[in-house]
Amino acid sequence: MPSGKGKNQKANAKEKGGEKVKDTTKDKAEPSTTAGRLIAIEGTRGPDVTEAAGEVVKRLGKAKVSSGASRWDASNTFYEMKLGKSKNLKVSPRVLLLLYATDLVFRLKWEIQPAIEQGMTVIAAPYVETGIAFGRAAGLPRKWLTELFSFAPKASACYRVKEKKKKEAWKAKPTDGFLEFAGAALAASSAGWDAAELRSRIIEQIDELEAAKKCKKLGKKV
Image (cartoon, rainbow, N blue to C red; front, side, top):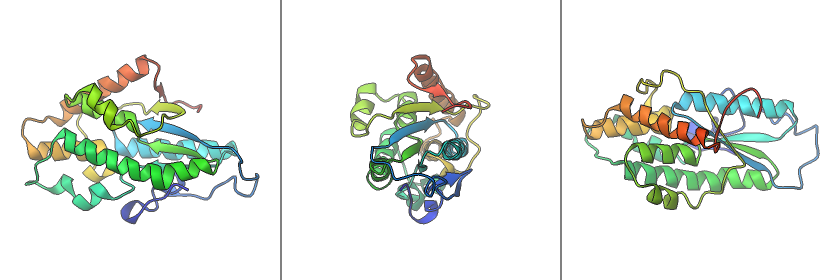
């Protein structure tokens, strides 16, 4: 079952609006004998992605589908390093993505894959495409990004959260999401990074993903 440690322990369990919830199908259906599914939710604002994941879990619960959410930083890698508050630590987009990939390995091993093997539908919030979009927006080669995330199994479906105020920088806390964290860390490392411009470029990458029909806009149906 998707779960976390420390700060994110409750948030990485089965969710409803970001809170831990009971599996609504546990007492109503026999355990599944088939593998579950992986659904990716991508977006540039951590709180929006978390809220969307909770909503999808809620919808699936009403449809009697056993599900749970796996959130960014389940390993507490970013939380413990506290890069968002460090003014002296120098980081680069490559370093940030290597850390993101490391956290995703943890999520796959301890949350996503075990739950899927039990027949659950897991909502990865976010998953691979958010990391790739960040890397492309930061100027990293697509080949390097593809190789970096080659370990991650392809999601059965990909959805994007509707973006609000596309030309604005992140206003949430750096610990609210990977992109907030990355934006704050880069800005602290170098005055050459503009958070609003970076987010705008990331949205362009996700727009291209949607245009190629590789990721749909999250609506009322999943």
